[in-house]
Length: 444
Image (cartoon, rainbow, N blue to C red; front, side, top):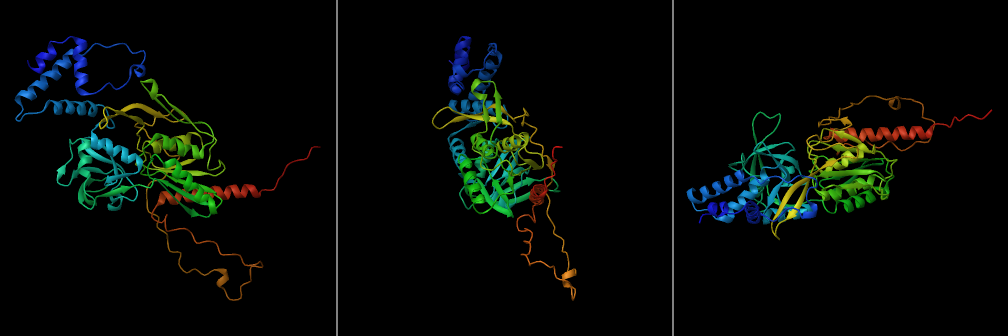
């Protein structure tokens, strides 16, 4: 008896159960199933269509095909038809995901997604082969080596990007503003990502860069802030989330908690009870609310980055600067099927404290600043009063000359340059306000 005949002979409940048991274990336990949803009739016509296609492939395809392979391909198809972030994770992909969130994995160092049959670069990761080769957020990858990617699954594309460290891969990309596709050679390497970096930009202005949100990002941020505060009194902080593709939700919450001492950070809503979560700030603030913050975002800031930017914006804790973010506001849950396989399934949407959905909208900056280069103009050799023969002295003890303006990091980064200027301006305003004499009136 053929598979089609066997399935046709079963009753409706047994028919559905047979198909599910052949494909995957149930996604949710009974106590997490969506509530108050009426039971729907089993789509017998579609199930018959499935078995018909299955049987035709078995009997007519040019080469024999294993039953297990056909059923596993059906699972991939079910997930691929949902949204770009749901996927069937085979052993290699499941292992890669676990390595990615831990901060060490092999590859090119780019976060990618599917768009219109091509591979879109969400963001290159800092200090990786892709970034060093010049790959940019928004690039559309049309070929990997000699192989076109149109119609290729995301998992297959990622598999092609991986390889032996030291080997080369030519990425053909279409970039906005370029007349023709670019061929960029990237040398594969082991990717070890330091999630948080810090340095001082100027007198009292600290710089924190989060490359992606990993399991230990909260602890790394705490250590970075302590280093900044060790030798300086912070007058302002730039939090750079540009080209940060996101990562672990808990890490995003911990980052927000470092800057907020109360209030809602983010909440999620989905169809099942355990997908509705709310995260609130605690008193474990690392930077006092009197220290102004500028958050830099761009089109490569996604997911967890948008959670942080949205929370600090809604809580009026930071000024958001840059361009609109990516707009990934969905929650993916990893649902293990076996020890080596799992589903990555979209189960909820993120919302900012004021109820804004990030999905397909992103975070709109408070101050729009496009990417540009800073070109410092040569001031020339102008003569000043102190250069004139016989000029009068100042009359006060000579003070140290003011520090030279910082150019090493901001001379090619207009967005960072503007963030630094804003924080310096806020520090000046705060200092001027503190110097104002008290003009209170006396009771008559």
